[in-house]
Length: 513
Image (cartoon, rainbow, N blue to C red; front, side, top):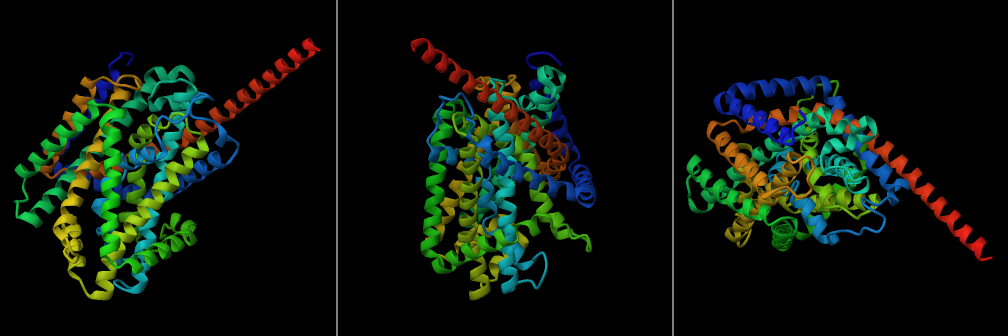
């Protein structure tokens, strides 16, 4: 496994082999994945919850301690991107498309089926926002930040390749350049391909559902293939233009459109209720954060926690290599403290406000105005819930079109970042991969999504990805220790350089005297 293209060929072959199972045996894959998830939830759910909390604690520790002043790059490096653009890029590369998909559906789901207590009540409304904030809060972003800060430190400060294996250098040394490193990179590549392919698939289903809801365009495979083809053409063109071109500008456009949609909904919706829901939700989340983070329900079947909390935490861990690698690539020149504050808390506040506006408004319509059709839509077809929700507001068609455009652009930016990361890993950590490699991965991802939609294998592959959270969590725990070791050594090196500089200065002063 020492060839220059080893990671590319092996990961491509394994990806296609796994996808083939989803194509030719989708029911068997879904059954196996579901069984694997059930085993993990019943036996290792505690490990997932504990790992995610450790990731958050680690991020806070290195961000607020003496390590926080270390720069992700040379001491004279400064951020490559403005803070607003940087936040837009990391947000667009990660959960933007999922926020649009679940903005209404998830809070309403928890409202009508809460983790405990009476459903469709004032209590379940409060619990809905509280648990939504748990699933999309600091725990999720800490998973990304662990990978991002580790890779950025070793890539820009220690001048190692742009591959996740570089993060283990303090533990294994030059073995990262051999079979050990390539094995890690192949696992990471596989998780990225599955994650972005399923994301494209579900995004396509939502756009097709919106087109059907608005204009009667049939929901079917051929329509979905056309959507995938258009999106693929756009994200291939964007990724070829590079970070400074399409990805940067599309991320900024994403943020503009997202703020526009939020602004419209804030003005058209129950403004006072939204603001109250936002503050109440943040307060409940902060007050119950520890309790919710360790909630395992050992005295019951724990099905709600398994289906939602453990699934989400496993999903964030599975997506961490992709998002973390991309965030690392765009974070050169920032201090660790600045990185942690920007990569965790700012996106979290944005996500919280999004759910307050969308989900909070939907729950208000159901709870206070009797619009139960929204709840029925969530129960029957999640992809149509957002468009049903917009029907209760002025300019509903405009809002629906804006949401569909937002889904498409969010996916383009997510795919851009995924293809860029895949290119870096495939070319042994090349920070600027060739267009050929990126195009190959882009076409593979599009083909995989189309075939999985046709065969109904999306859910099975999504479950298979979450099942990979266990080995990835183990890798990330070792990554925390490796990063701590590397940062500790770096502080000693910085201290030695300062002492050397002081001694040199004193010697010069002595000679002059």
